[in-house]
Image 1 (cartoon, helix red, strand yellow):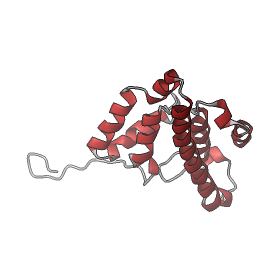
Image 2: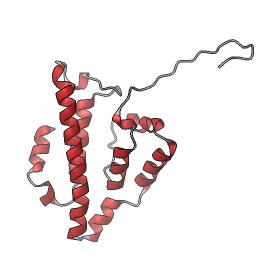
Image 3: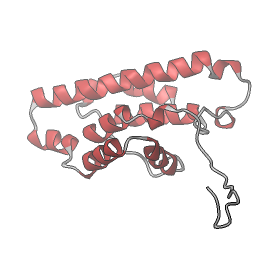
Image 4: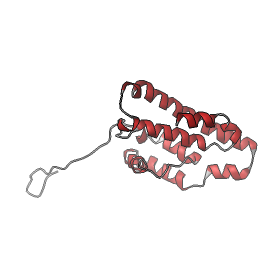
Length: 159
């Protein structure tokens, strides 16, 4: 831009590096399945990443988060088939997050001797603690305790 006299006006811009948090796919799945974002230091970052999404995508996620609440509707229905279908969806997201965690570890984390919270991902966050937390939070969204089964101990051990 320029000021009234035609002189250039410089301003500093700050952009995050490329990160999956800028995609609308997984946040939309989280919102639809009722897997909420926790109130912690990551929340402002995740919300800021919506500025990188097409406005319609961010609005869609906001609408999903406002409800109605699918997870609560499934719980209230008390229907085994519906609960199983919901838990299969959540389990697929758990599997995705498990694979994402493993890939981040294999191709990034294992090569760095620093502590997990000292290593920043492309988006500028300490990605390993957050990936671990997302996987655990997603797993906790399963409704049927039988679906969680022995995976509770595995998830706790991996945390």
